[in-house]
Image (cartoon, rainbow, N blue to C red; front, side):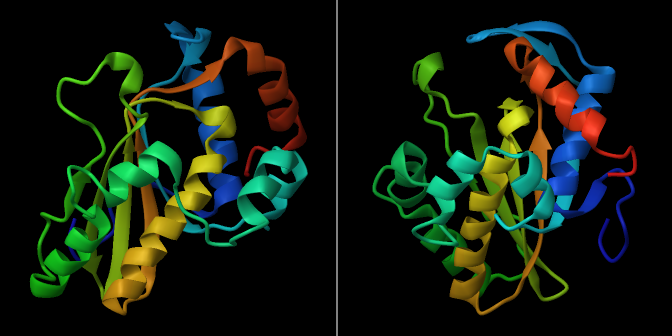
Length: 210
């Protein structure tokens, strides 16, 4: 809702607190399901915002996968998506989609059309990325980005959220604007049954208010 607070969106100050909340959401409301990798606990769709994201987040440093976070953070603190997703962002059918977004917002700052897809029509199901689309908009003189996941194993979700902030900062810098919150929508948030003990350990160690 323009000019107001959308109370349907859950808001968290840090990535670590958002991660714990999403884990608890799936743990509390999830049902038995199946994914390509095996049995899962599948939760209802969820929409939330994160104000601050960093690999130095104390909750992530305490309970996250330190080895994976170090690989992401050691070379470039603001490292963004690379590999196939990076190609889809920067060379989708010859289009650098982040430059296209910045050019559109520069010419039409009020627009809601700065929306890019990371899927290719007709590609095999095994090739469809879990991150399906990104949207960008300027509100209150800040750049807000929404990441839409068709599905996500939320036990490792933070490994995507911090790099997504890097993409948001890249476009914000191009426009000369500060970043607003990172908004995330996950259609099928889930936990692999094989990770259930790890999730239970993390949630038991965190107070309900986190």
